[in-house]
Image 1 (cartoon, rainbow, N blue to C red):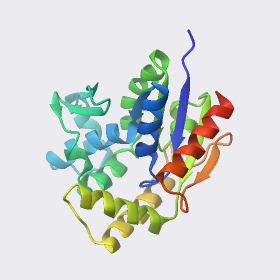
Image 2 (cartoon, rainbow, N blue to C red):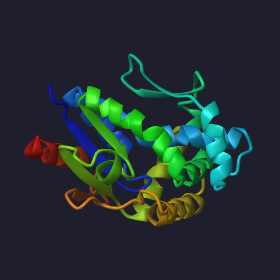
Image 3 (cartoon, rainbow, N blue to C red):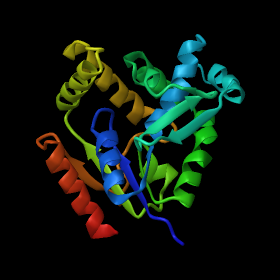
Length: 223
């Protein structure tokens, strides 16, 4: 039986994870947050004092890293690093830039590519990230490029951090988002870009309910 795959790409803070998780629950699809997978590698580098921009050093760590995914009763994707649940740790602000740096290395992307494709072969999935429609699942049934202005993404990120009890100044969050945008779109391997057959969805002026309705409409027209 053929599985259905939905690829959602876009910059940091565009709301990919929140939307994809909610829609996956409605459609009873498996939700795969690929950013969380790269964050897990980034967390390992951070905890072991490895320069995330040093490709040789990061590559040397890969044999010692076991990345696992679990889906609990809450339906959420839990990330495991060598058997340890690091779902909360990978959301710390410092991990974001580490994740962006390690994800630029071809050996890291190759290390994780088959894991992601295997999930799509075996399940109906909604997968979000930076290169899902262009590299990971180039034949996805639905491709969406989700975006919003940098200030709006920073505002949402600040609200999220505040709700988690780890508030950050708006200017700092905005600067980090702009830096990650640049890094993600200028890396040599699998840069962030809209796939030619992806639909652009800009949610700058949309609230969550409106964004979800727009996304569901796109999926319904194509699946």
